[in-house]
Length: 416
Image (cartoon, rainbow, N blue to C red):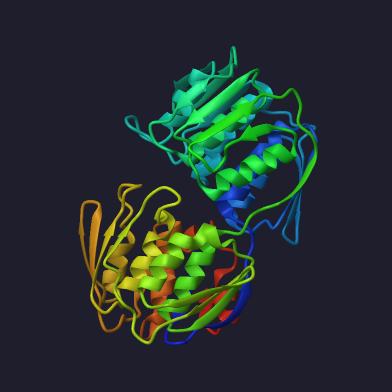
C-alpha cells in the first residue's frame, strides 16, 4: 500500500498550474452517455476517480482515450446499461450515472455506492426525485434497478440542496418532454459547469447557480468540445499548504468567486492574498491567527471539503478555533491522527475545538478519506521531523501527483 513520507520544515514558494475540478469532470463524463457520439473534454485531472469512470465507460462499450489532460469519449456503441459492483465500490460518486443511464437507455442496474446501509441515506434524495419523474425504482439484494416507465417533466422540491441529486435530475430531465424545475437546487460551481456542458451539447437549461433550475426537454444532443473549470478545493488545499509552511505561492487559472469563502478564512488567519488577473497570490504570516469559528455550509458557504485542511492549519494557530461541520456526519476522522502529531483537538458531536500548539511532531498517521488525507500531508509539511501518511490511495482520488506539485514548491515529499 502506497504512502507519503513527508519531511517537514520547508517553506513553500513558487508558482503552480493545476488541472480541472474533480467534482465537475465526473458528472461531465457521466453526461457524455446522453449523447450518441463524441465528446472532447479538456483540463481533465489524472486522478483515480477519473480512471474508474473511464473503466466504467469502457466496460459498457464506449471508446475512451485520455492523453495530456484531454479526454475523448465516443458513446455510439454502448452495449450495456448495468454498472458492475466492482466499479461502484471504488467510487461513491458513481451514483451520478443513474440519471444519465436512465436518460439514454430507459433502464439501469447499479449497486449501492459504498455499500449503503438500510435507513436514511444520501441517495434517498436521488431515488425519490427519479420516482417523481416516472422512473420505477426497485431496491433488490443490494442493487438499485431503475426503469423509465413514463418519464415526465415535473416540479421537484429537494429537501436538501444535494449536488448529486441535482445532477441526476438534470440528466433525467434533459430528454424528458416538457419543463422540469428543480427547487432548492444545489448552487455549486460544478453544477453550473455541468449545465454549461449539457447546453453546449444542445440541452436547454436555465438558472444553474441559483436555487431554481429549469430544464426544457430536447429530443437530441450533439457532439461537443469543452474545458472543465478549475478545482476550487485543490486550489484551496495548496493555498493552505503555503500558509501552514509560512510560504509564498502563486496559483494560476483560478476563478476568484469560486474560492472566495476559502480566501476569506485564510485572510482571517493573517494571510495576505491578492488576485492578479486569473492568478491568486498568498503570502503567509509569521504567526498564524486562530479563526474564531469555521462553519461548513453548501455553496456559497465554506465548503465541507476544505474543513480538514483548515483544521490542520488551525492546529498551529495562536488561539482557539471552533469548527462546526454542518454537511456530513462523522467527518472528523482526521482529528485523532492530528492529535497523534501533537494537536490539541476536542471533538463534541458536530463541533471540534482546536487550541493552537507551538509545533507538531512527525509520526506515522493513516488517511481514512480524501480530504482528511490531504490535511495530514499539510500537517506533515509543517511538523518537525518525518511524517508517514499511509493509505494515500484516498488522496489519489482527488489530487493529481500531490507529491510532485508540493516538491515543485520546495517540499520534500516521497511516494513510497
